[in-house]
Image 1: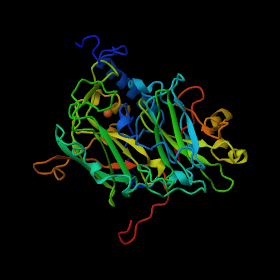
Image 2: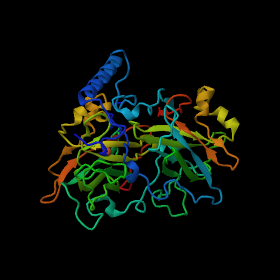
Image 3: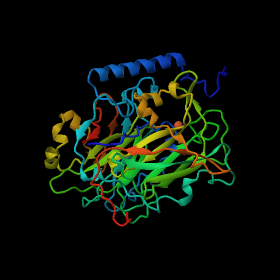
Image 4: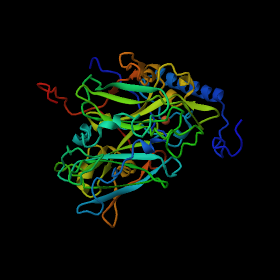
Length: 269
Length: 184
Ligand SMILES: [Fe+2]
């Protein structure tokens, strides 16, 4: 048990058990399935109205979004280039004088639109906890150690194949106060720009086989298993670099209208 | 419409985006108080009308002549080129502020700034628009605004302050809920 005054035991301390929370998740999924049976479309992403994730209760819109024809500005994306991102920013293990603790990993994949076209030269940003499950952010009061050699934020631009690649360390799972004994599965936050502003996405990448998936109201806010699976990277031995780092592959598909896509000629982007 | 790949779902930015996403100069597309610069500011509010101190807004807009900026350098601004993109986290009072230029539009169209909201507790991005209040004829003719009830329309049009700045609040839920967008 935590002592009173412990940072994880404050006024907003939570009393719902995981069992009660898991029952709420199951009930919300059943409600979704009933709506689908009644003719509602299947979701490709998370339900915004998902009370098991407590912080969402007062922060989700109650009305359906208005369907609108995009204007020109919404059909293109901001342009990012070499001046925006330093070459070393894709390696989160070399930002300090020493090596960070934990399992060194390479995370790589391709960013594509929903027709399979590569998203070229666009910005990918990540942030994550350290190997002990602690963020450097001052709001993180999880009493796991900070790592003086790990900040946990990185950036890169996709190449001509839409590929990105980061070197980092495997983040730890971490506790939070959504309910009693709540733990987030290990994840890396990803922010991506597409070929159009309509395709902008911020999401989280997970690691295969995490025992916390079933218990997590953020991961489970996506009601379709097939969609949840699309957030889970796969171990890729081809990406593993000998005597150095384990490899995880994760491709990202962006959807939404964009200006007409032009196949580049002669290899020129 | 065959062979569409299934999209990657969004997820919340969570509570710790503060060292991953904001960057120096993010909210200042132009130097504050420089010629032509306008402030765009407001608050993000939740379903109780309480400020949301852990939200982030991104804006993307045309230049004053109505063109989509193609200049790079939104993350490391060179002070010369207008990139059209900015990012601002809300402060402890739920407030955000940008310094930018007045967006242009094609003749007769209502100029607006495209915006995306992210927040802890918000499972996915929300798209919206911030229209300029000045050209009332164009606002009346706008295809989106003209399809909305007056109370909804009001949530998409900024207010011009006495200083000439733009004030615009975003309400995630409830009374005066901002109109959010999905694209055809
Ligand atoms: Fe996180």
